[in-house]
Length: 250
Image 1 (cartoon, rainbow, N blue to C red):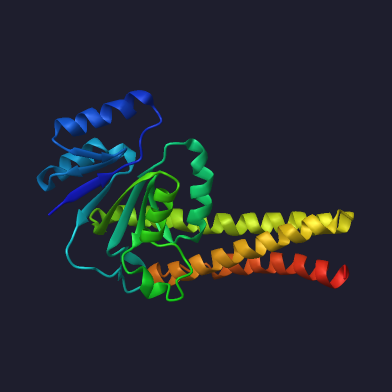
Image 2 (cartoon, one colour):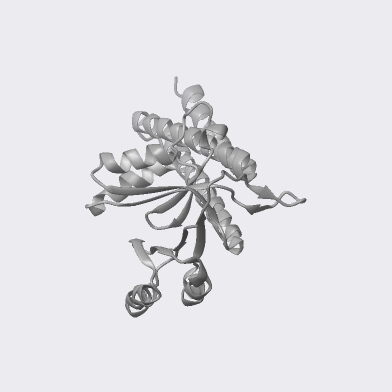
């Protein structure tokens, strides 16, 4: 059975350079940046070495596992995941990747390493979102290198809540940004600014909200995370600008 570990690299150069040497000394095999293949019997030692770097221990399994929930509805296990790790030759690709990932209901394990639901089509029947295969294809299209590992589960489940919190922050952050942008547009309307660029920006916000709504719906079906209050705020903000433009300026 194959085990992996992924961790967040330290900002201190000394620590960042020392960790790979210690992992190699244990016989771990470097696959991608801070992503390593390890022997099962050395997992405890590896986690000890990486304890300050938020390590996530992963295991490759044959069967596809469903997420597990406690009686109160809290998720305890994420189920089977598809890991996509990548590298690109140019830093200017980062913004393109960031924008592409806005349509991807995924879990960020660290920079350039993302986990996707193994059963994506079950929660995205209309095929409107980005799954592991589409994301890997996109990276190849922009001349990047990519590696995909399917049927992986998280072993140290104490890291699950942290990952879920990062998902919440990502979605709620995008929602808040739509609200801020909409408030700015609302103010521009009443200052008498040129209405054409305001309409263009409103159309952009509408598209952003639609993407966010689809991604949030996927997370709710997959991981039972409720984003309804955040979505209501961003919807009302967009609608408010839409009504003042198209009811007051036509």
